[in-house]
Amino acid sequence: MREWLRWGWRQLTSMRTALILLFLLALAAIPGSMVPQQRISPIEVMDWKKAHPNLDKVFEPLGMYDVYSSPWFSAIYLLLFVSLIGCILPRIVKYARDLRRPLAKVPARLDRLPAAGVAAVEPSDEALRRAEAWLRRRRYRTRRTDDGISAERGFLREFGNLLFHLSLVGVLVGLAWSSLLGFRGTVVVVEGRGFANAITQYDDFTAGAWVRTDDLEEFSLTVDSFEAAFETGRVQRGAARVFDATLTVRDGRGEHTELVTVNEPYTTAGGSQINLLGHGYAGHFTVKDGNGAVAFQGPQVFLPQDGNFSSVGVVKVPDARPQRLAFEVIFLPTAVLDETGPHSVFPDALDPEVWLNAWAGEPAEETGVPESIYTLNTTGLEPVEGDGGERLRARMKPGSGFTLPDGLGSVQFDGYSRWVKLQISQTPGNPLALASVLIGLVGLTISLFVKPRRLFVRPGTGQVDVGGLDRSDTGIGLEDEVAELVGVIEGKD
Image 1 (cartoon, rainbow, N blue to C red):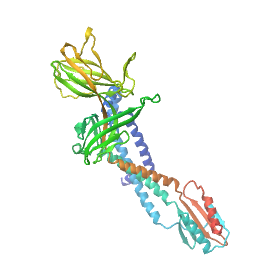
Image 2 (tube, helix red, strand yellow):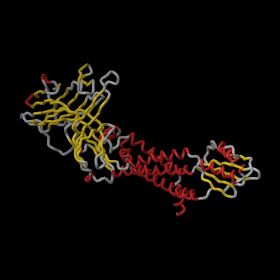
Image 3 (cartoon, helix red, strand yellow):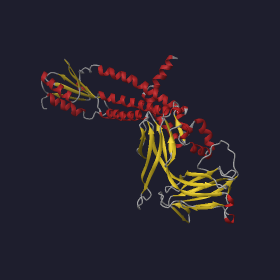
Image 4 (cartoon, one colour):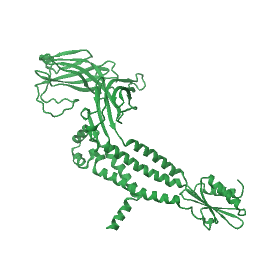
C-alpha cells in the first residue's frame, strides 16, 4: 500500500501531470463562457433552461450553471495546486544545493566536448590569469585548481523556471482568495437617487463562500448626474464619446465627489470598487386613479433594445382604485415614425417621446411572489379600449398627458432622466494574481534568454586546451566563445 501511495504521489507531482492538469483546467473553464452562469446572470439561466429543456436535464446535475464552484472544477483546481507545490519544492531544494556545490572539475579530455580549441602558448600563470579575468567579465563563476579553470554561468535559468512555476501557484492562490472572500453586485441608480451598500439594495449579488453579507463595508453614494455624448458626424454617427457619472460618495474618507467613467472606477476606503457598466433612460410619470388620487409618481427605468436606445419598460400602478392600472411603454430618445413603426434614430435625447398602451383590472391580493419590474404580468388585466373599441395607444412628449376612458384616471409623461448601472465588487486576491502574472513573465523571460554554459581551461604540454559545453539545447555561439577565449589566452585580446 505504501508503495502505491508513493507511486501515486510521484505521478501527481510530476511536471507532466501539472501540465495535463493545467490543460484540463483551461478546458474545464470553457463551459463557463458558453453556458449562462447563475452567479452572473440568473435570468439568462432561466431563459436557457426554458429554451433547452433536454440539455438542462444533463447540465443541472453537472453544475454547468455554476461551473467555477462545481465539484469537478474545484477538484482539478486543487489537484493542480497540489501538483505544482509537490513539483516545485524538491526543485527548490535541489537548486539551493546546486548553488552551494563547487563547480565541476576540469575534464581530462577537453577535445571530446562539443566545442574545443587549443591556445598555442606555453602554459603560464599569466595566461590563466587572463583567461580567468575574461570569464569573470562574462559573468562566469570560476574555480581555479591545479588542473586548470572551471567556469559556469546560467544559474539564473533554473531560477527563472522556479519563479515562473511559483507564479502559477500565486495566480491560483489569488483567484481562490477572490473567489472565497470576494463579492460582486450590480444596481441600477437613477440620477438624483442614491444607494447604500447593503445586501437588500442590490439588484443582483454574488459572493464567495466565506463572505459575511452582514459585514459589508459601510458606504453610500448618490448619482448626482450622468453625462453621455455621442458622435453626430457622418462617420461613426451615434458612437459613444463620453460616459461620465458624477457621484457623491460617503465612506471612510468622509463625503466627497468622484467622477467615474467606464475605464476609471472609484475604490472606496474599504477596498470596494465602483465600476460604471451601463446606462439608459428613465421616464418620469404621474398616474392618477379613478378617484383622482396620485397612485404613482416618479421615474421608471427602461431597458435599451438597440444601439439607438429604443427602450422598453412598464409602469405598474397596483394601488390605483377602483381598478389597478399598468402601462407598457416604449421610450424613444430621438423618435421617428415611418413605415417600420416608431423607433429611435439617435441614442441621445434630441426629440424624446413615449408610446404606451394601458391595462386595467380588479385589484389583486398581495402574494409575496416577486415580479420583474421590467415585464408585465397581464393575469387579471384587460387592455384599455379607446374610441371605436380599438385598443388604446398613446403617443406623448415630455409634459403631455391624457385622460383614460371610463373614469379609470389619467397619466402624464413628466419628462426623463438617465440611469446608470453600477457594479460594486471586492476581489482581494486580484493584486496577488496580477503580481504573480508579472513575476511569471519575468521568470519566463529569464528562462528563455539565459543560456547555461560551462567553459574549461586545462594547461597542457606546450599548449593550453579549451573546451565548452552548452547545457541548453541550442548551443548557439558556443564555438565563437571558445575561439574568443583561446585568443585571450594567446594574448590577442
